[in-house]
Image 1 (cartoon, one colour):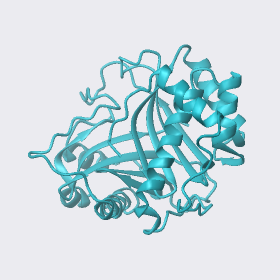
Image 2 (cartoon, helix red, strand yellow):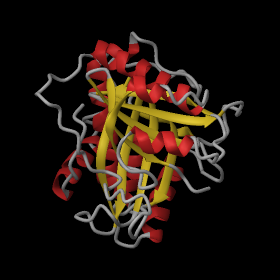
Image 3 (cartoon, one colour):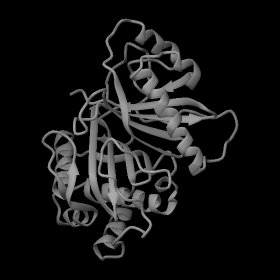
Image 4 (cartoon, one colour):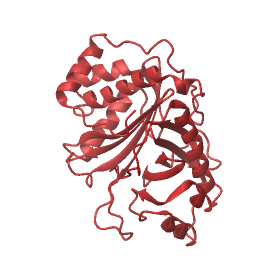
Length: 311
């Protein structure tokens, strides 16, 4: 899938939603990847090669955002959510209700916290039975420096969401001490020469590579991985640090304690690998600590985004 998905217009949302309500989209392809039901598991390599099912799942999630976020209490949104979310869908997180109403309640809370906000999808990935969305809860869609940053992760089975995780944080305001003025969403990396989109096989290699690099750094505290797996000038979209590996090395060498954490769910689509982490030793149902996105090109991590809930 492309690394950037533009905001869907209201007209397109109505057309897509009407098609679902009318029953034109009723089930996933027969060979869609099955769910494993375990938050710490990942789809098998065979599941990850099913491009048709992945595209179908991505379409369902785009439709969900486009048709329900603007007015989650409306009968139209209720009908769409009822079609796309299983009645017993598991919502991970403290105090989060399950099923369609739980997801709509999340969207309603977002709009209450940020009146008039729109859901602006920045990156979307579909891999196996997982779909992940990096998006802005945006009071002004033209301004990436306002509102909240969010990552939502969905597991789908037979055309319906059966599991859901959600992470969000307020977008930092003001001038950061690090001097990093990249937004939390922008795509800045440009390869030295055009490269073709990665194959499904390359996507899987990228996933294994990035997850290993993440665990080596954040679980094993081995900063030498920065010299082997990262572009020295990689682009950083977390305002706590400037671009490049030197700042991360300094941060790890500063004595600031970093509780060991590791990737427990991961997926790869296009040139971006997504990891979702928990503390080492956490129980499977414990909250996710962070979502990280890594752009991989030419065997190196070139760009990074994350969402880290303050709680």
